[in-house]
Length: 72
Image (cartoon, rainbow, N blue to C red; front, side, top):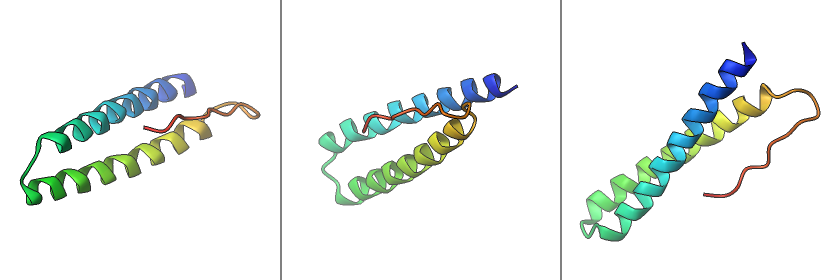
């Protein structure tokens, strides 16, 4: 059961990594300050959610095993 939960959490983390990357690319193209602000807020929320999911993922790992995450 933990294996299935870890797979689901890994997929969610992977999806958020892609979303955050795409939002960063969009920030380079946007000139409207309001839209820029909205993308920045959404990116911040996605990073917070990703950190929460990483914590849940690490909690499901066996004792003594820890994942080191790269910065995105």
